[in-house]
Length: 336
Image 1: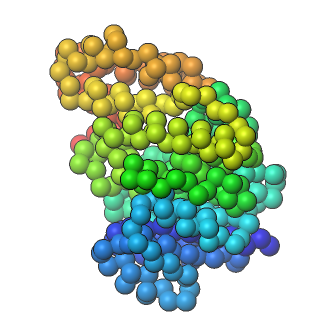
Image 2: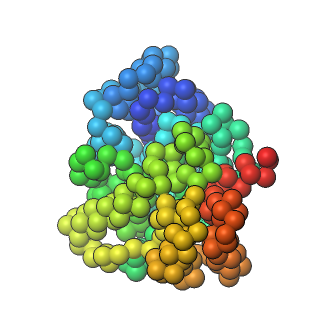
């Protein structure tokens, strides 16, 4: 039986941290180690970690951001496989067992699984991520510039030897967050990706000033597109220098394009919305129409919903943007 490490990277999430640690300790796979890396929290996270005693290994470091925490995590890994669990997310008890059965079935660099989308209190919302499954050969897609469908950080298990070829990632003031981007797409250049088509954990959506149109827990609409582009550039440099792989200069990804779409159209006047549609929408619609993962029905539906932003009635336009940008918004709107 191969040992597996669940590493929980935490910063100021004392209100969620115990749930994450409990879920890691509750795994029905006996050979599971749990490590918590605290990235210089200023809340009561250290006290929460202390309550678990010797059942976990704890590492306390100065604050450096998520990239710094991931670099430390990969440096510490001694097992063959690992899951990097965000401290506001949870794993279901069979997650590691099912992941290891998948790893045993092939020579994979990564095994990914669905995550149920949870509200801030941990309640189920009825949605899950991702909505599409990638092919085994995600490297071929990346060579063409397509970012394949993946769950957020907590929905991925990695072969550690592959992670160690991607990390450490450069630590700069501009590159503090989004460390899972390098793990998710970098490891796929080194091995096939297996997908488990069931939810094995929960992804908590919270900490947003405008939940309906939010892009992620940590990035607002204006920052996300720029951050994505910068990460792709860094990944290209890592792929070239460490793997001898040349990735295209530009990438295609609907998550990236919908962030740009939302930042330009959401709560914007009619003239701005029309200007975006006529002058700036080419790459957005390319990420829909040429999307290799979507059905024709999904493509048509997204195009039609996007077109609602051209209507004079702004509340309808904003509803369409929320619906496209954030699956959780669909359930919130329906519940009103």
